[in-house]
Length: 101
Image (cartoon, helix red, strand yellow):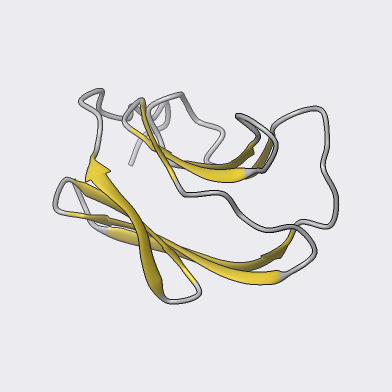
């Protein structure tokens, strides 16, 4: 239920066959994750949280970009180069962690 932000620069230099993860909490499917996805001819970024995936618009190849991914009170937001690119509600499956706090 806490808000968080994940930010990093990225450079996609060529098309590829398989989708790939940039960040994954590796704990379960409900936790946060950021992936490069290729639904068509150009890639986009997917921001997953609570088993819901929010997609950015297409990302151009061979260009440095800066991505910021925000969870803000139930809303997921993707910023590319400081500009809001996508926004939508988070999912409903709460993350569970298998270790004691």
